Length: 207
Image (cartoon, rainbow, N blue to C red; front, side, top):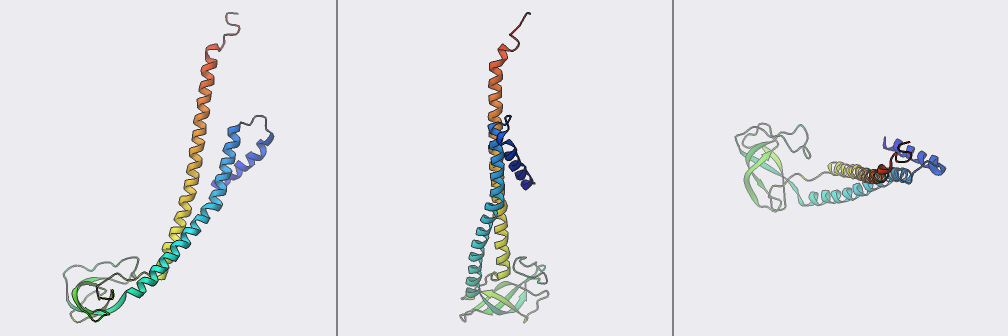
């Protein structure tokens, strides 16, 4: 719809070049619509591409940093903590994963022995069952590192959001300018009417 409006505006510019009935505001509105169309079709996608590329670079760097600083270790269930299984993080886990809260023992990458309550990807954990945990270098539990696919998805969404936001901003500015122009036009009409009103019909009065 925005593209159709811009094409109509461009057609209006061409038709009104030598039209004696055209108003300056008509040309301004048409040029404004055409400029907004160009910005929406060219500048907004470019901004989205830049934002998406920047986000992709930053997120992929985070992926590399997290993969280097987070370690997968094997933990052993000591006992299950009462409570129903919990759904996993939808951004980092598969739909097949179900997590239960357990008390477990594990050893960190630096050899430190750890004991505590953690989440285990086991449906029915039993004492002695083994499961994997993500920890930092000292064995403290951390979240699963960000994966490449998830990072790319976030970058694409960031770029798309920037494109939509930029296009909306351009259209909003265009509408605001047109609204102010219309208000100014109505104000001038009111002023002209106030001047002409007292003399309306005076010529030939009483004839």
